[in-house]
Amino acid sequence: PQLCRESSNHILAIMDTVVLHGEGEGSAAPSTNAGSTTQPPNLPSGWQGRLWFMWIGKKRTSYLEHYTDHNAFTRNGVHYVQWLDVMINVQGRPVIFGPKMLVIFLMASLVTWIAMDDISNTPLDDGINKDTLGFLTFGLSLLLVFRVGQSYNRYNEARVKWGMMVNRTRDIVRQFWTYCDDVEINKRATKWTIAFVFTCKQSLRWKPECNELLALLGSADVRHVNAADHMPIYAMEKISDCIKDALKGGHIDTQTAYMIDRNITSFEDQIGASERILKTPVPYGLVLHLRFLIVLYILCLPLFLVATLHWGTIPVTVIFAYTLTGLEDISQEIENPFREAWHALPIDGICQAIQSNLHEIQARQIERRKQALRPPPVP
Image (cartoon, rainbow, N blue to C red; front, side, top):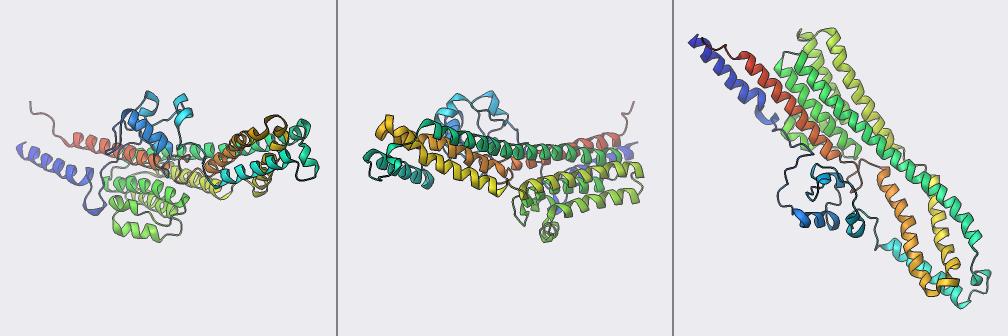
C-alpha cells in the first residue's frame, strides 16, 4: 500500500507540471476572461477612469473592451449609453473638428453670403421654399434610414456568428475531454481550437501573421500557421488531425468522431459568413447617391433658412449637417465590424474569453483525472 501511495503521488506531481501547465515553449497560462472585474494596471479608476474612457480611451480598441468601473453596467464589460455620455463623450462621436466640417462651414458661409447680398443675379438670391426642401428631405430620409439599417444588420450578424464561435469552441473542447481518454490529444485539440479563433481574428483584419500564438503553440507551429494562405483552415486541419488520431487509437468511436467533427463544420460556416460580411460591403452606388444627396441638402438648406435667420443660418446649417454626416460616418464605421476601431466588435476580448473558458475546461478535467488516480483512504 505504501508503494502504491508513493507511485500515485509521483504520477500526480507529473500531471501537475506537464499536463496542467504544459511543457516547453508551447505552454501558456490561462488568460483572463474579457468580462473580468479586475482593473488592469496603470489605468485610472472612478471618475478619472470614466473621463479617460470618454475623452481619451483607446481609438483602435472597441469601446466594449475599455475598462471602466463607474457603474454596475460597465463593471462587467458591457457599456450602455447614459445621459452623461451624451453630454461629454468625445471618443464615441463622429469627428467634430476636421476637414469635412471645415468644408461644410465654408460652403454654408458662401451660400449664405450669396443669398444675403443678392450678388449672383440668379433665382438663388431669393432662396427656396419649404416644399422644394421637403421633397429633398423625403428622399434623403429614406436612403439614410436604409443605410443605417444595412450597416447595423451587418454588425449584428457578425456578432451572432462570433457568438456561435464561442459556443462551438466550448462544445468541441468539452467533447474531447469528456469522451477521449488520451490527455495529449485533448491538449492538442484545446490549443488548436484556441489558435483557430485567434487566426480568424487576424484573417478578418487582413493580417497575414498570428504571432500572438507564440506562447501557446511555440515558434515552429506559428511559422506553419503564418505560412498558410488561409490560417483558420490550417488550424481546423490540426483539430481534424486530433479527431483522426483519437479514432485511430481507439480512444473514441466513429459516432463520437462524427459528433465532434460537426463542430469543425460549424467553424467553417462561421468564418465563411464572417468573410462574406467583410468582403461584401454596402453597394457602392447606394452610398455614392446618399452622400450626393447629403451634400445637395447641405447646399440647399441655407437658401431656405437665410430669409429668417440671416447670418445665423451658418451655425444652424453646420449643426444640422453634422447630424446627417455623423449618421453616415457611424454607418461606415460599423459596416466593417471586425476592424480595430472604437465602434467595432470586441473580437480581442471574445478571443481572450474563449481562451480562458477552454483553459478552465482543461484544468477542471485534469483535476478530475487526478482525483480518479488518488488511492482510496486507508481504513
